[in-house]
Image 1: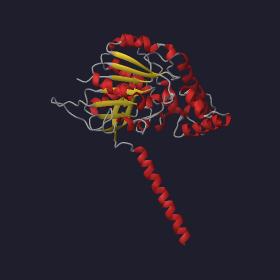
Image 2: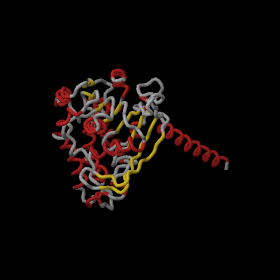
Image 3: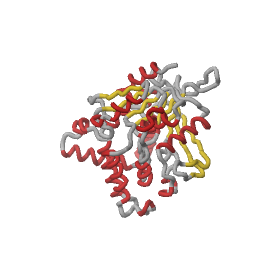
Image 4: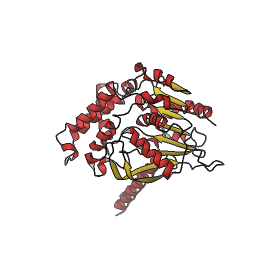
Length: 362
């Protein structure tokens, strides 16, 4: 009995520690969360959804100026296939929202939403599967604009920024709502149609899922594991960082173990229908013709080892010249950069953010 009691006590302590550690991981900084339900939301293609749920997290509190308007609102949007929880980490939130940091929660009201089709917001896997409206980045931005203005009662943003897909949406924000923000900071993105290798790899991901016999046009009864695995393999290459991968996996055995671990972790919580929608959402993205509409000062930041937005394409070098009060920062490859994923490491680029906020202060 004594041994059993000790074992039970140890088990309870282990479970408690796991729960505490898990909570600590989630609460890198204090945050709250909420939902906004949009009735009969109309998508760009004319389809409507009776009830569209947008889930969001936030740190800090709104501050109102003498006119009663919120003047410290910051919107940060996540990347393709992720959620706002990917940004509430030590590497991101822990470097931005604490006291004295660039987006100190005692000074800013920072909202991090789950985009349509992602996280806890409405998505195909909730039940509609492939009958879910085929949303685009425009739809995602329009829904967030309604959330900000109608639900959060915010009519102006101090800053709009985002990582990868969120970075692309920052360009969309600047064109669709040019008077809404003081500053724009797209991370790991380019203001051009998704074409070339980028589109090819997205199509590979979609085709890998659809060509799995178990997918059954989205009405699968058995998970299309083979299609999912192939899709994740392609996704790994999209976000790869060759220099770091060589360091992390310098032998054949290490490389195969690295890949196996990646596939196990990447598959957790993934729904293949959601993935199809997430990668198709970029199909109509193309800010290039309307860059002249952007009024807010803009600072785009990419890294030289980004396999999704390789610097040799020179897209941003040209595009940035079309936008007044804009600049392009290309981070050099270092031991700290992580390819496309550098967007989520503000320790590398936060000094640029600090200067940008100072320059755009009114």
